[in-house]
Amino acid sequence: QVQLVESGGGLVQTGGSLRLSCAASGRTFSSYDMAWFRQAPGKEREFVAAINRRGVSTYYGDSVKGRFTISRDNGKNTMYLQMNSLKPEDTAVYYCAAGAGDNYDFWGQGTQVTVSS
Image 1: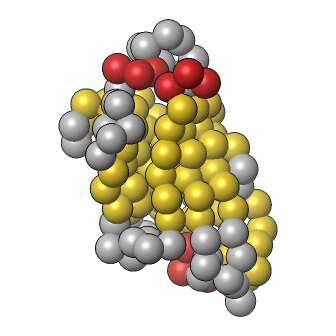
Image 2 (image 1 turned 90 degrees about the horizontal axis):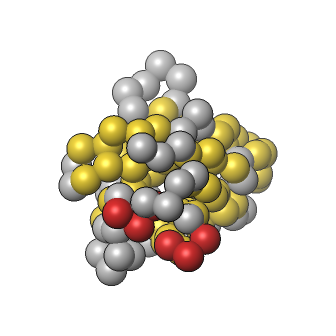
């Protein structure tokens, strides 16, 4: 089992940048594939990005390709999401998740990202 805690959210202007972090407890972080999801008010949860357990393979949702970068540091039990060229439509609560493949069993509590126009 793993516990996840997101941080790094906040208020930023259009075109700005933020870096989110997801800190994991336990010694098994490197055994999990990891991902970021987001959910805006009144909308369904949306896939943002994923990274495999070794950090070799990454995947992105179409809406963030070329602007966001997912990474992980297994030595620090932490995953990151570098978000550049932010847009108002990126406003959402961002969640990190851990699992295997496309099945994510563990979720963080979320961090709010607000992009002002």
